[in-house]
Each structure stands twice: as structure tokens, then as C-alpha cells.
Length: 454
Image (cartoon, rainbow, N blue to C red; front, top):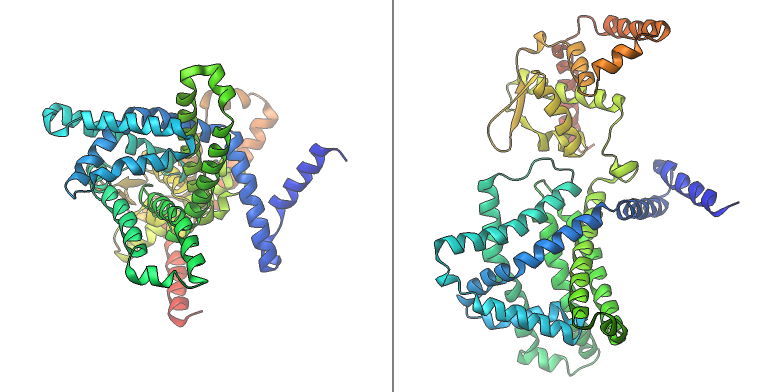
């Protein structure tokens, strides 16, 4: 058997396995294998690499303004002198060249006095910083299949809180760790074994733990959707381990980088710096993919994380959405948002939004002006026929000109008309009001099961 056919057979075995019939440890192994295949697919498609390169460019433009804002915040707490050591630690894998780059960056930050920039200069400074955070949010939203970014007011409040509180929290974590390690009790305890070895191990693991916590916060906070904290923590753990491994590989490579310096001369350290920033962003993006797949394992299979949906799946999803919105309409409940619908149905928000936008464009649903928008019926459910809803879904991807040319074949036209007639007969007289009773009964049964603990 050839290698390609063996690889294809292995992939089919992993993707087509019925996990519900397997023991728990085998289900975990298959899910892990599917995660590996999904990450391989995402990386080989090249889109993650393009996003990382775009973030590298934005980082080069924004790093000095970002550190200037952080410097101004930390100066109020009297710990701004610790900014340079933290930057040295981040660029430590680059060796002596990294120290030189960190020193240059800190020099630029010292020369950029926020107080003398003026209102226009300060606005440009904040815009440059916000553009970096906005680009990061866009990359994360793409991973989480979020089609709408935060509004301007939400961005301003969220980003400002990160810019003001983020540096303080990071330095507080480092300061607390250093303080605990230098107390008299800690010094006394480390004199006894194995507490001494455990203390040394904890000291080596502290940078990893801080990076882990920072990544977990980013994965939980940045995407404009509800991220499960457990998924964010798992994705952050993998990303933090990769970050430490990448730092070790870079440090090892820098020992023998004399040949690169001979080729690129003074540009060698700049190339290594750009490569390190690119690897860092790529690791961060891979971590958020892991968090997404952990929260939505149904997206592990299929091309591009199953962004596309089959016509049958679109119809079933539209009927489910219409049933839930109609049930709310008839029970007098508050209108629902796309995020809440996705959580109720158990699918990703991108799929729900695709259907909601189509039904809104066709006048079946109405979207409110609030943020986030909520959806309600445009008229009485008895006046919205199910056939009308299905036709609205078909018109989105239908090309009338091509359809007319295809219907020139008598056999094709005859079968197409028969299918349309059969569907019309099956849905004749049915409206959205016919969906609501079944949905209400289902909701009541789920509520009863949750109360009884079943």
C-alpha cells in the first residue's frame, strides 16, 4: 500500500469513527487526533500564517506607542523602571541582539513624552495602539466565526480597560511572586529538602504560569463572543508551552547564528526579531484555535472548520431558529440575540447569523437597533408561510440566469417542476404558527428534566 493511500485511510478512519460507541479513553484519543488534523489543515491552508504576518506589521508600527502608554500608566505607580527588564525577558531568546533591540525600543519610548504630544498627537498615539488591539480582535473573531465586531463604544471601553489595567496586573503578578519568594518564612522553608527543590522548580515555572494566565485572559476577553473559561485555559496552556519551547529553540539557534550574520550583516538581528515576533503571533493564533475547537468540537471535521453548510443543514437550522423565535413571540418573552440562539441550539454563532441575516433581508425577521441586535418576527406567525421561509433561503444562492438556461432541457425542467410541486404540496397551509407548539412543548420538557435532575 502506498503512503498517500495509507494516510488517506488513516484520515478517513479518524473522521468517520462513531465516537459514542467507544470507551471514554478511545473517544479522547480520537478527539485529539481530529484536533491534530484540524490544526494541520488550518496551518497548511496558509490563512493563519497571513494573519500572523499582518500582526507582525501592525506590531512594528504599534510597539513603541503601546509601550509609551504602558510606561505612562506604570509611572503613576512608580514601577515604570521595570518595563525594560520585562522587555529584555521577552526578547531573551534573541541573545545579545535581543538586548540591543530592547534597549533601542526603550530609548524610543523615553523620547516619546506623552505629556508634550498635544491633543492631536495623543489621539494619534491612542489610535495606533487601538489599531493593534482591533486587528487582534479581528483575527480572534475570525477564528471564533464571529461576523460582527464590537461597536465603537464597546471597543473604547474594553480597550481602555486593557491598556490601563493590563500593565498594572502583569507587574503586580511579578512583584507578588518576587515578594513571596523573598520573605523570611520562604527563605527558612527552602533550607529544608525537598522544599528547596520544589521552590527552585516553582521559580522556573513562574514565567510559564504568568504567560499561561495572560494568554488565558486574552483568549477569554478578546473575541466578541462568549468563550468558555475552561476552553480558554486549555488553549492558553498549550500556547504557553509552545511559547517556552520556541524560546528555547531560538536561544539554541542563536548560539550558531554566525553564518546568518555573515550573510545578512547588520540586518541579521532585524530578521531574527521579525521571525520571533511572527512565531509568537502564530503560537497565539494556534492557541485560540485550540480553545475554539475545544468549545466547538463539531467544527473539527470538514473543510475550513465546516464554515460551509449543506442545503439540508441550512433548512433545518432555519426551521429551528424560526421555531424558537416564534415560540418567544407567542409566549411574550423578550426577543433573542444571535449569540443566545447559538448557545440554545448548540452550534457556532456564524451559522446562526448567516440564516438570520438572510431572513432579515427577506423581510421575515426584523433586527433591533440595540447592541447586540435582537431578532423578532416581522408580522404574525400565522401570516408567514414555511414555504416562504424555504424560498428565502434558496434565493440567496440562486442564479436566475443560470437556472433559466438549465431549464431549457425538458427532462431537467420536468423533474425540477415535480420537485417544486411536491414541496409545495407538503408545505401547503403550514405557517410558523405550526412550529411554535412543538417548540414550546420541547422547551417545557427540557425545563422539567433540569428541575428533576434527569
